[in-house]
Image (tube, rainbow, N blue to C red; front, side, top):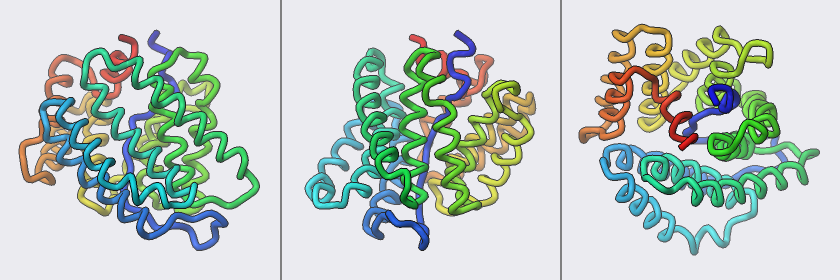
Length: 272
């Protein structure tokens, strides 16, 4: 089972500026809603109860659903992709939700990949590439190796396309970093590329939510590299970015104390 998740990546994204050269772009209103979603995610991370965090997310989605229904297809797709990724973050903390997660993410993965295939000859907004790779990657985390083999390189290529549009796109950098970190070298993985991308994502993070997510990922890279001192430095930095005690950071510390990174924890969680 240890190779089951070689293509996986935990994801998580934020503020955006669509490419001026794209045929399909998302609106400034969608950008604002994405920023709001990822800012809200900080409060979800502070909540010790995954069920309460999920309820808060669902309430927020209910509040924008009528407006979302009027959006163009691309905007609705990006928002739904990222909402489902944040749902995964909360549901993975709740026992007995795996079947529900698979149903949710399988359907959205098929929808978003079908859209990308239908528009493959058009230039896309970077967030279409990013969000397609992101929702697909969390779905892969729940399924057998065959699914990872089906989607793995496609996920990587989506993030590479996003970086072609914006080479400093921190969200694509940190997702791609995890892909390279866990993919075996003979299949295209590279610890060197992963470290470079993690560091670039850290340098390019702009919003508070972006910096929070990237600092946590940097901490877990350091943990994997057996540098527990730097791991704690980055966790403390993430902690200082939130106004309340973060239940999620406390959880990460607990997992580290038990002997594994949060990356490997999620791999094990998906096997249950």
